[in-house]
Image 1 (tube, one colour):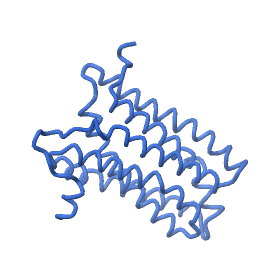
Image 2 (cartoon, one colour; image 1 turned 90 degrees about the vertical axis):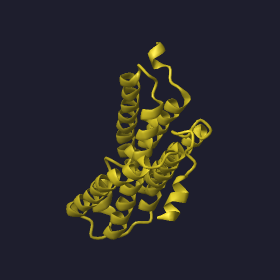
Image 3 (tube, helix red, strand yellow; image 1 turned 90 degrees about the horizontal axis):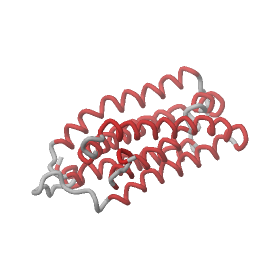
Length: 210
C-alpha cells in the first residue's frame, strides 16, 4: 500500500479536485434542461453556444496563461493562479440562480472558461513538480479517479436534487462544493515553495506591471 501514500500537497490537490468536481458535476446533467425551461429564449441552440463559449475560451486561454506562468520563477505564481481560478469557477453556479437571459449564461460560461484555464495552468504545474518520484502513474491515476467518481456521483445526485428541490437549490449546493474545493487549497499554502531559490516575483505584481 506504500504506492498510495501521498505527500500533503498532492493529497490536497486531489481532494480539492474531488470536492470541486462533485460540485460542478451536479450541473452537468441538468444544464440543457435549465436553459430550455428557465431561461427566456432558451433553446438547444443556446445550449450549444454556451458550451462552445466555455470550451473555446478555456482552450484559447490555457496556453497563454501557461506560458506566462512558466516565465515567472516563483511557485507562488502558480499557486495564486490555481486558487484564484478555482475560486472564480467555484462561485459561478451561484450566478445561475440570478440568470434570466441567454446573455447571462454566455457571460458565466466565459468566466468559467477563464477560471478553469487559470486554475488548470497552476494545478498541473504544481502537481507535476510535487508528484512523488516513482509514483507518477499511480498519483495521476488517483486524481483522474477522484474527478471521475466525483463527477459521476454528482451527475446522479444532480438529477435527483432538481427533481425534488428545484434548480436553485442544486445551483446553491454546487456553488458551496465548488467554493469549498477552492478553499481546501489554502491548507497547503505554507508547503508551496518557490521553484527557484531566488524567485521573488508574485503573480499579482506581474499583473500590475503588464
